[in-house]
Length: 136
Image 1 (cartoon, rainbow, N blue to C red):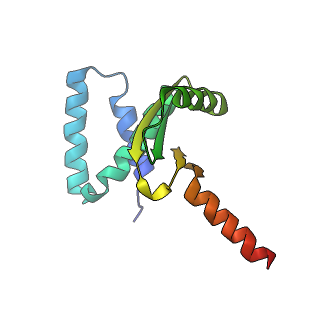
Image 2 (image 1 turned 60 degrees about the horizontal axis):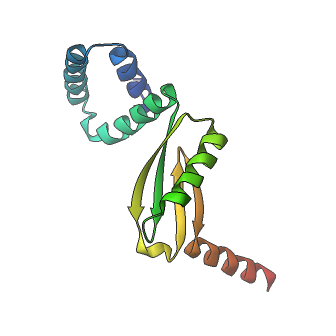
Image 3 (image 1 turned 90 degrees about the horizontal axis):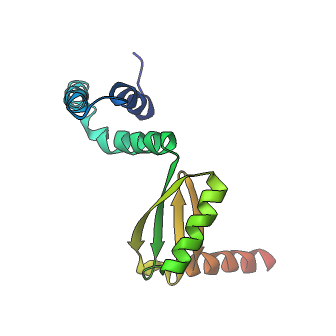
């Protein structure tokens, strides 16, 4: 028995729905739901949709960034981050999803694709602690 990965399913959904009209996409969506239900894969829908989002973003040259901070990031900082991310990932568009997280203490944390870029105070304290322990 072969197992189909969430990524494979997402690629199949993308291929089936690409270049279709809205009504054709609705039909494809219904058939995908039936397939997932029959194959008992409905519990994996969030992972499959996450993979599908990555595929669509890649095709449209977009980057999704989950930005976590203690307080809302100001416009100037976000513009600077957007420019740096576009340059680093050769993206045409950057889409931010902001999340407030008091546990970070300060600074911010970004998740871009499968990469985590952590500029939080909590992370800096942990690295300092690790460094001090190694020095002893």
